[in-house]
Amino acid sequence: MLAIALLGALATGVFRSALDTHVARLQVPVEIRVALDAEVPKLAEAKVPPQVVGEQRRALEEDLNEAFVRSFRVVMLVAAGFAPTSA
Image (cartoon, rainbow, N blue to C red; front, side, top):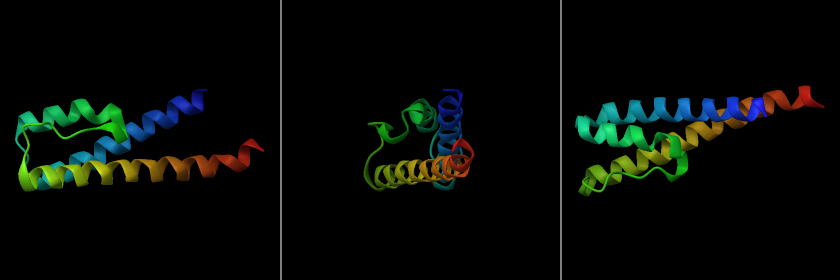
């Protein structure tokens, strides 16, 4: 059970870090950053705030997807690394 909690915390941390990197590149206004930060715990269910439109919305949706994929990959690699020790 502890491993599940730790992997969840790892996934959230990697997701937040990846999203922050992408959002900084786009120079998103502070209000949008705050709204996106509130979405971080949702991981794959995170949504772009409704006030974002156009090309910026598409870019942020792609960034959310990429951040989730990165967090998923990291968690799977860690879990795969621990698998032999559980046998």
